Image 1 (cartoon, rainbow, N blue to C red):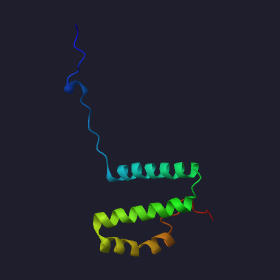
Image 2: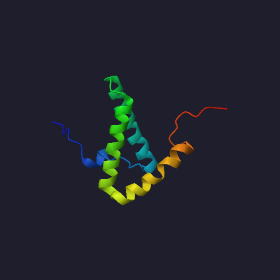
Image 3: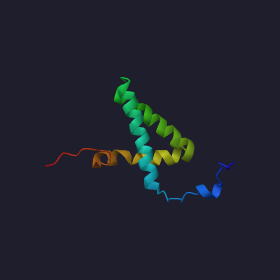
Image 4: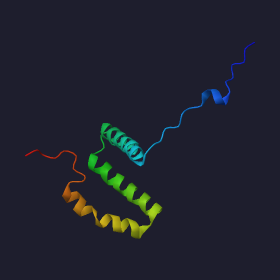
Length: 92
C-alpha cells in the first residue's frame, strides 16, 4: 500500500516578497468589493462612504492615537483640493 501523505518539504512554496504598495492595493480591492456589495443591496454610496470613513478613523485612532490622526486629518483639505482623491479628472 502506498503512503499518500506528502512530506512537508515536498510542498514548499517559494516565498514572494509583498510590498507595502501591494498590500494597500489588495486592501483597496476588498474595500471596492464591499462598496459594490452594498450598492447591490441598495445601500446609498454616500452612506457607505460615511461608514467607511468612521471605521477608518476609529481604527487609525486605535492604532496611532488621537493626536497623530488629527495631524494627518489636517492635511486632508489640501489633498482633496489638489485632486489626490479624484479618480476621473477632466481632460482639457
